[in-house]
Length: 248
Image (tube, rainbow, N blue to C red; front, side):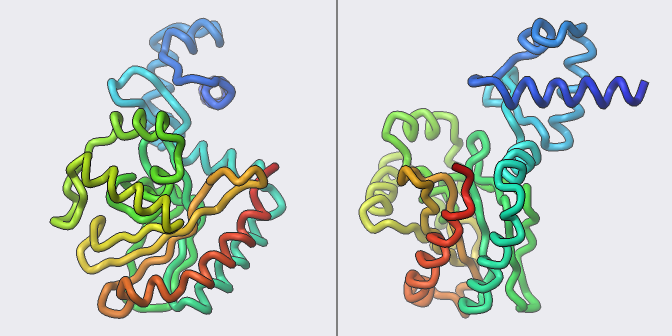
């Protein structure tokens, strides 16, 4: 029975990953010839384990952060060690934690993370999901999107005030995204966590499309916005190296 459940769960993940659109339970029942209660139960389990997520509205399933990370690592199999080495070298130069992130659903997902050696750190494991509108990576990814896609994404994103500095007004956020697109990098001015500043730069594929972001963050007391922006040279150099590890 356990083997059957595992096989069926894998079949669900393969179907969701292969689909060009979010799927509802009846779609999976038809595709896999399984009874609705079985698919519903397995989808709930896979959602609880973060292999699937549900789109706003609660019916449509898309790949979750763990499935996204698995797919990303499989596509880049053989370069994960190289990617970590690149990030470790950057952390050594910057003295602060670096994250390699992308979008999963309407959130930012951490694919890789290298911690700095400071005793006080923010612990966010690979696979963690954080908001788009109040993080350096999230705002960068939004700013670099085609306007139509950004509009759809923002319609699905609740602009919650994670801190008093979070941008919750849609017009203000749009102005912020325009500014980010012009300057080519994004800042988190204690918008996600009080006392934490961050900067993010794009990681582009060979077509020039932004597929991921490289972010660096630290306590504002030692990593001010001015200091963050002084690290742009190291960050953009590192982003170019990371871009070479992206799948074709």
